Length: 302
Image: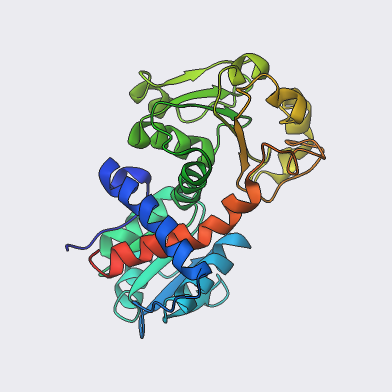
């Protein structure tokens, strides 16, 4: 198979994404059964982190270890990238030493440039614009609990951030309807809204937005790098909190997701994560299994 990267969900076909989800579920089942499967023995994943992480680092490191491989954690203090080495030079060198590279950074253009000069697969582990690995986990989680998400209605509550952008791509690739409830001025990327107008709508009122929804999703009001806006955003987003009361407006069997970490009492009520509709802990765990399926796909020609 030719060199493939995973920078957004659009890098894979809808059929490839469906197969990836099914494979992640299978890998998870086999892992729970104690099956030893090491397709990446003697393979190395380089992990470049310019943004902090818990779930991303642990899931990728654990996934590589469980697959028999190794991983190298690289912070800005550990690489010449942090001292101003050109991205293309770092990409040329690192990709000659490892078998795949995942990057968690700020500007999406940076990861695109890195991929252009890399000899090995590059995985987007989060940029300011997209978070496709999280969507793999979310789609797996929905399928495990409710079956195919195709034709369903999903509601996004809150900031039109990188997660919201990725949900727009997911609506296109997995064929579901997406309703976005964001305050005026905090919509997702306008181009994405225009390109997906046949399946994505913006409804300002959260209660109206969740009506008829099969899945309700939210994220923090202020992402990394926006900490100085926290107080202002808390004021603007105060009516966009996900809560058990809001879930009563959705379908009776609707699920709730949050990519975590969550700020209880802000974008979610204190009891929302433990509500009967919440599958956030399965969602978090599935980062491990979805990314193992992704690594297998990219490195094993599966």
